Image 1: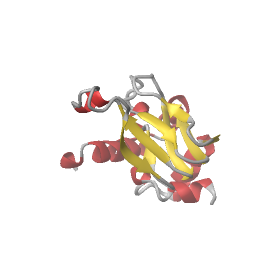
Image 2 (image 1 turned 90 degrees about the horizontal axis):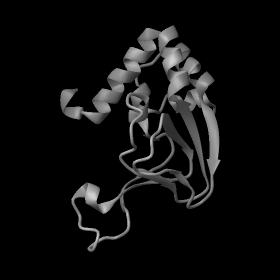
Image 3 (image 1 turned 30 degrees about the vertical axis):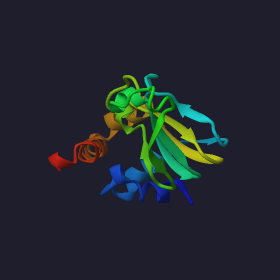
Image 4 (image 1 turned 60 degrees about the vertical axis):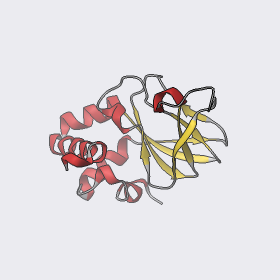
Length: 146
């Protein structure tokens, strides 16, 4: 599937015209991961949004983050499993601070990435695109505000 077509399916890119989706597609990079490969770890800094193209990604959180004693559950807990067209790491476009979870592939996985620097430059060139994407990120992260 062409990148711009996949971007049509991404929630935070809702309502973007084809021209803006093509601009975003131009800054996307494709990365391939193997089964059990870690995309990023909880508390690591990051500046990249990921879009699952093929395969499956498990989002994991350390038990204390969820208020669970490590003695009861020493391994990270799966809080989501993501597949084609789903995104993760989107907060890094707004806040390049520590990641709130880890991301690990459960099979061979192809991801599209949008790096913060490229996204920022694109937003400077097309402020309407930046406004729409940021508004959609807020709506996804804080649905009660929507």
